[in-house]
Image 1 (cartoon, rainbow, N blue to C red):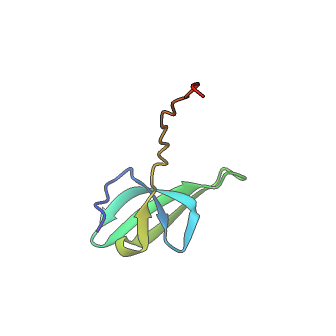
Image 2 (image 1 turned 30 degrees about the vertical axis):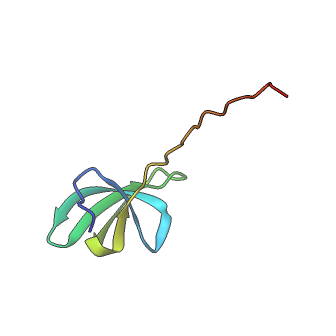
Length: 71
């Protein structure tokens, strides 16, 4: 199970396109908020901790390729 803390970026498992920020954790519930980009309106929602996941940081791996100019 993920360890959530205040300030974590999360998404609800049913809709991973909306990023929420945890403002408060009480019992098994996370009180979250987000801002709608189009209207800049703030929305608040309460989710159970089992229905949310932390937003993963996208990692980019850069590998070194060697050029072999010998024929």
